[in-house]
Length: 241
Image (cartoon, rainbow, N blue to C red; front, side):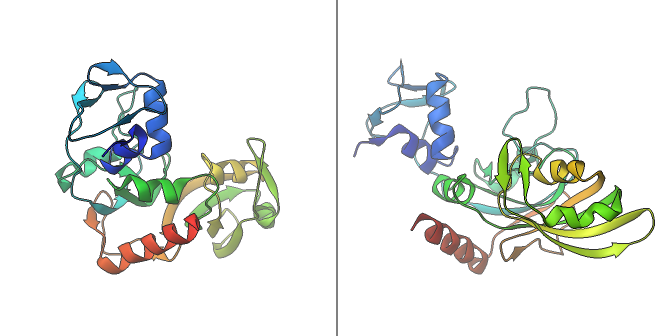
């Protein structure tokens, strides 16, 4: 059965549909030897689809992983600067998985990875706001901490006020629990910068009600449990309604 190329790529676990559209526009996708165009349709059983010159096979078994991302890794499939990527940490999982969202190079904590492109798209689409919870160690203008829960603009966009709880505080630094609702690029660091606060450590501890497994050590991963997966799929279904 013919389907849109971006859906085929997403179902194969290579990327989200939105990312697949970018790949097509960038000329990275061919069908039967010819560069693909947006709107093209194909049948995986009949047509030869290639991405970056590599044939696309049948859909892989779906994998859903929880990774404790360490600092010093980027959340991309490949880094043009040669830095280590989170994909390097999960190569033994048996599938080509992609990160769900991102954590910047110097941040750590909960990162989900999967080859289920539909789930990636549902959880990361800009119009879908899934709460993300962080523990953040800051120093600097500690009297400005309450400003973090006020309306702000990041990169020209108005963001919803964060929820802020002070876990620890002394004269030099404070440990906060921050909940944000969007997840724009380096959002927490930019928020803190606007308030005169320097981020010393940033760790994602939960996505929605899914917490980072306390048994996972930095750099380790495991597959999601059936209950955890069902929770994410329920979120995704509600977001798409």
